[in-house]
Image (cartoon, rainbow, N blue to C red; front, side, top):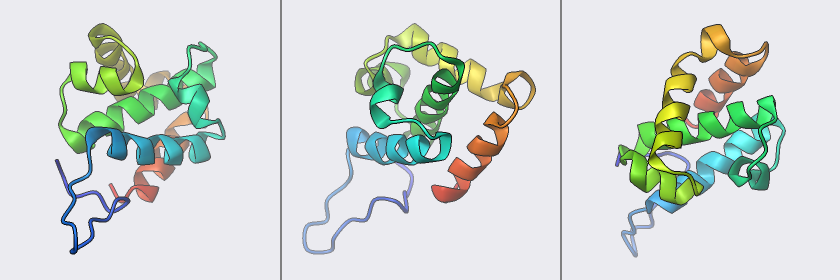
Amino acid sequence: MKDFPGIMTTPAFSVTPTLADVAGVIVKETAIVFKVSPRDIFGRSRKERLVWARHAAIAITREITGADNVKVGAVFRRDNATIHHAMRRFVQADTKAPPGVPACISELRRRLGL
């Protein structure tokens, strides 16, 4: 797992953050930037803004952790194919996303130190 500035380990415990810990931080930051709730990101809604927020959280979680689709899917309660689809869509964000989404993704990356 890459260094992640949003989750600090304490020298006393030398705890390595879990995939769920990292995803939790990413989901919270994604919710703030996209102005949605973390619950919405984990939810089933297909509203466009929520879908893009969900795709961003999934893709960045996978990018930071290097976890495979199955593990990321377990955290987000999605199957392997859905994670694969989110990754494909996230790559197309600059050209296919509605106005404002690429700026949100840039802000999210900045907030996460990426």
